View (cartoon, rainbow, N blue to C red):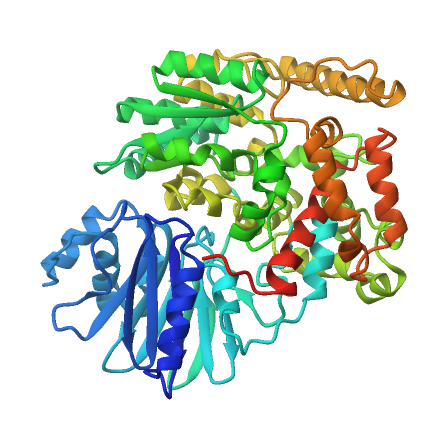
Length: 636
């Protein structure tokens, strides 16, 4: 994935050993032959940038006027026209008029506080040549990951874990808390952790200062839900303001000489982007992937016709995992389940049409729909959920997130020795993370928790960035700050999102929503009925398949491909999973109870249980082990 690799070492920085390591690190995150590399070495810093040549394509580093400070940056910042004019009035000269040059002059003017003024998706490194001081910063949501470690007397940084692993002196040790988290929650929950001890992910909104051999990390911003609200704040005012800020956010991100595209689904997030984007740009390319004739494809086609976008549909083939699972695991360092690799096969074709892809990420949480994910048989009403607190909330939220390998299954899933090593770890790390969220309001607390871990769910986009640049509208500073400031009673239901869509684009509000089969223009009651009907139909279909061994199989064409059925029905996929998961190399690692894994594969094949997502997690972890632990991959 395009990004940055760097070495900081007070002594011996110019050695051939470090120069060679920098080249290897840069090569490890270069995955396509069209990607470009730039390097810079001056003690104590050695740094390289890999990029697509789409955004900020001028050669880096970029220096200030007297060459005393320079910057390397991967990513984008938006909406800084007024700030740039102010900097010019203060005497700063702009040669390139690009994002990194703006950030560099902003740093000159405001010091370390400069990053608080930036709206964007970025990782940047500023080097003060005279002071031999290095400043590294990322965006508020860590939309562009940066990993780092200290090995011996040098610090290593890389946009992918594999870059750090190119240092052959780094001792690879498994972080078992990360493994436990991955199988409990489907992702590594603790924001700093990776699968390797000693390799940390830079948390969102962080700034690193390296000076005189010492390194410090601090947060410059955090999600801050209000505890007190203006009692006169109305839903209509909130909707009007959200629409205005949203349109501005799209416009800021749709500037430039690029061709723009969007992954279009049957949901609300993508149409919320598509409407203002189509008004701003022409042509807009839209892409849908999924099942031919499925709800997603039909609804996306209607949206495209209304907005007059140039639309393409890509069918997801049933054997996509056999073709792309290993590549996806390699590109994402094994921290994203292979179940999320649907769209790898279409990115080469997308790249032919667009330079920049928009996509919705985190919008549903900001607009209130995450509230319902806390529902459970034990909580029969919103009031009971809102009254939950302390241990009750912790347990309820944990039970909902602990959905991949539930706690009661863990003693059977893991080997006895390994279970004793990680027993209680998932709940402990979850509770610690939840306790760190200071809000006392239940909705604010749970939303803050999920938004903090948003970047982890975003990592499949690391694959996209090997082909095109991307834009995340919901991360816009102004939009995000206003959205989290809306009172919980107004945003605790999807109704706010429906009203937002109706105000944003009445035409989009007339097209049905995939999850309910009802358009946002309809009253909330119809959506509740539609949600129950669709969910009930899915339950009936799966029950009939299980009871009849697949003899009776009604069509299930809601959303994306059914992972459970793909693993069962596609012969190549079923053999691929079986050959890897039941291989002696996999079963003898010591993590898992071999008899239980064999039983899972058998039960899934015979439809006694749906283990599809769990089998995908197992496959991902085993492929990661083979690529990064058993031997260092030779892929470039």
